[in-house]
Image (cartoon, rainbow, N blue to C red; front, side, top):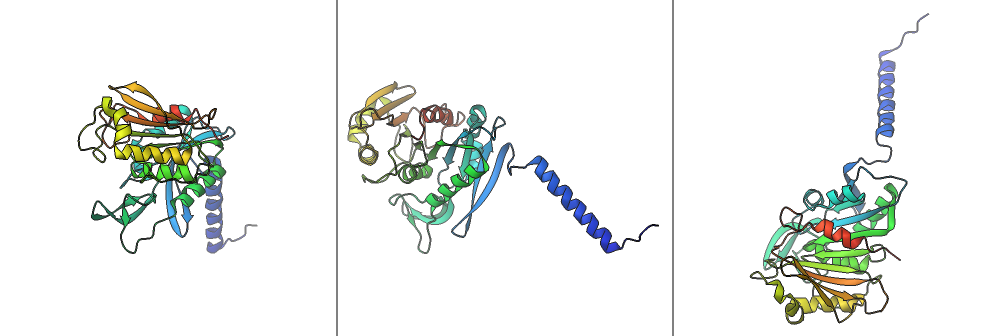
Length: 317
């Protein structure tokens, strides 16, 4: 005897089969919620949907803790742009590290006397103003919750989380060095840093590096010869204020050693003011570089490679 199946029952059976197939397919192909290569994630922060991109290297092993580097873009950029152009995803692939590219929020801001709509990180006051009616987002909360969420999704080495920022992202990197140094092992500020000569109270005193191009038109009217870098450290107001802020905030020495050469980069290294601490503050000027995060194409230097080689010396205690 054959039972007659109604049309509605057939539809229900077909729907259930497709749903089961889709669920099995998802579990089989992507049980952890990510893929090798590019991933876009979102997170809700104070009612806003915030995005960030993550590159998962082919060699990532979910059973082995992996270092992680967060890269902050500059003004008008976003996470996807720096995923593509910074060079960090390539370093992540080669070194088997997770690389993360969050996007800042879009605002109306006033900078250099002109108003514009653009993306900005909520850095310490002094470099730009918000237009009336704008509400700065809590980017520290965003970045902290992003890292916490990633630590649930991935096997992250909690002692080896690093952060680099470019331009406005470099300014935000300084704020992160102050307010997130309990979770960050080391920080790089590129073409953006602290504002006035101010003392902040960090969560932890950590290693910090700063780099700037010798023909960065956001800072210089003309190319600065590298042989004049050391003199500039001690006489140019911008350098004096920046170095003083880092010395007082993070406990770096008043003295430095100079290394490098005038055809590549000159670097001043300030050790910790406390003997025996494995920390340093690097201030570097890079030859023939404008206002860019160097990636080997826009400049001979591959910033991500250089910065990773410096980062990996350090871990949280």
